[in-house]
Image (cartoon, rainbow, N blue to C red; front, side, top):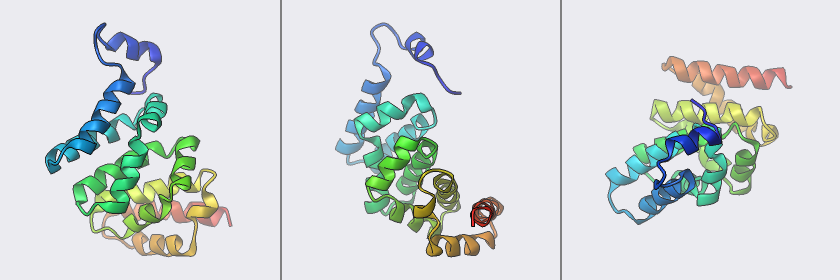
Amino acid sequence: MFSSQAQLKKRTPENGTDRENYLSLLVDEYINTNSLDAKCQVLANLANFAYDPINYVYIRDVGVLDIFIHVLKNEQNDKLINFAASGICNLCIDPDNVEYFLNHDALKPITKLLKSTQNDTVADAVTICIYLFNSHAKTAISTPEVVQDMHNLKNSNNTIVSNLASIFLDDVSKNN
C-alpha cells in the first residue's frame, strides 16, 4: 500500500525514527556488517522500502541506489543479487531513478541478469527492462543483445519469465 506524508507521520511514534533516518541506519548497517545473513536481511528491507514511491527521494538521498548498483556490479551471492534486482525493479517506475541508473552505468549489470540461473532474478531483470523500455531509456535498453536475450527467454520453461519476455518483445515490435 502506498503511503502519504500524513500516514507516515501518524505511524511514526513521537520519539521514533523518521523514514529517512531509518533508511540511513539500514544503509549504515549494510555497509558496516560482515554478516552475509545481515546483509541479505537489510537488502531485502531496502528492496521492500523501494516499493512505495513516497520513499524514492529518501532512497536516493541516503545512497540505496548506489548499494543496489554496487551489488549488481560486484557481488556473487545469488540472494544479494536477487534483493538488489528486486529493489531496482521497484524503483524503475520513477523517471529520476531511471536517470540515476543510466548515469551510473547500471544497464550493463542489469542486462547481465537476463542470463542468471535464478528465475526470480531473471523475472526481475526482464521486468526492469520492460519498465526501462517504457521510459526515456527506450533506446538504451532495446539493444540487439537484449532483444536476442529476450527471444531466448521467451522459450524459457519458467512461465513467468517466458511471459515477461513476450511482453518486452511485444513492446519492442509495437515501437519499431
